[in-house]
Length: 110
Image 1 (cartoon, rainbow, N blue to C red):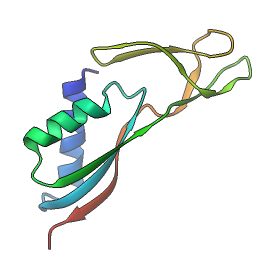
Image 2: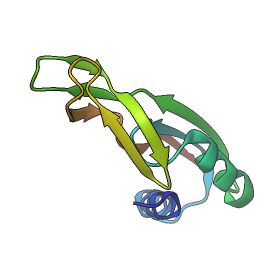
Image 3: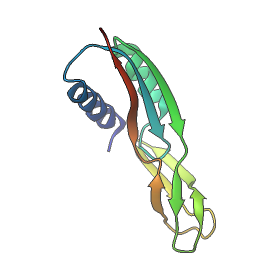
Image 4: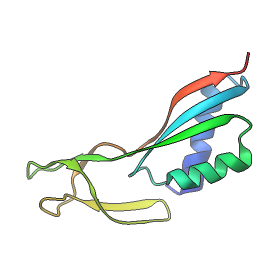
């Protein structure tokens, strides 16, 4: 998914979750395998958000059939596509966490 689409979906979900109430602040978690960077989200929010925000980056955790469980080895990241592999055997592991952009905290205006 392209970074613009990830951000659009995130903002739509945020509006739905707050039932359109005006926001005071929000905390976002950006996983390193999510397809967007914290910088891309920050640039979008600086231009478009009318609320305070904090962005936290989260490392990805993967599990491979070779037995490895830990951080993914990222080979390339471009245009919303992240290419990664197992740090131990080089195979393509299963993603355990770190592949999403989430809103972890929201405060609405009184």
